[in-house]
Picture 1 (tube, one colour):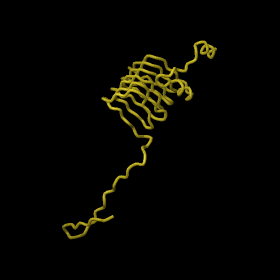
Picture 2 (cartoon, one colour):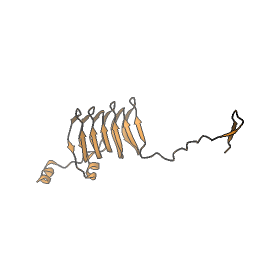
Picture 3 (spheres, helix red, strand yellow):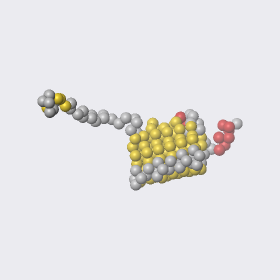
Picture 4 (tube, helix red, strand yellow):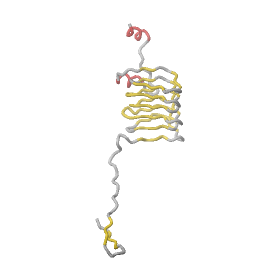
Length: 164
């Protein structure tokens, strides 16, 4: 690289260091986060390999098995959700599966079933549905189906036999 030389008032030459040029990343880190904005409306399946914040509208399903999902305060989802960690600040109508945890904040509204090893309903959260805190990860993944597929739940007589 060439160096620029500049003489100061006392005639002593000084050397300016070249400004480092940022190198483009070869790939996104697992900590990168995508955002679906307030005015965005999606119908269908949303999936990806990064964390996601949804402030807009989604009608379908969201599948991020290894990443975090946040439904922002302006988010309105009619969808089944599956992610590592799920935080609901907005409105969700559909089933939610978290392989680590699900949090429904004080501004969150959920109408559906939640399956996760850890579930937090903050004071003021609105929730209608059932909660299954089964730490078995395989049951969490099999509980929330993709939209349009029948749910895999045992008949009532089998559930009673298991409880006996």
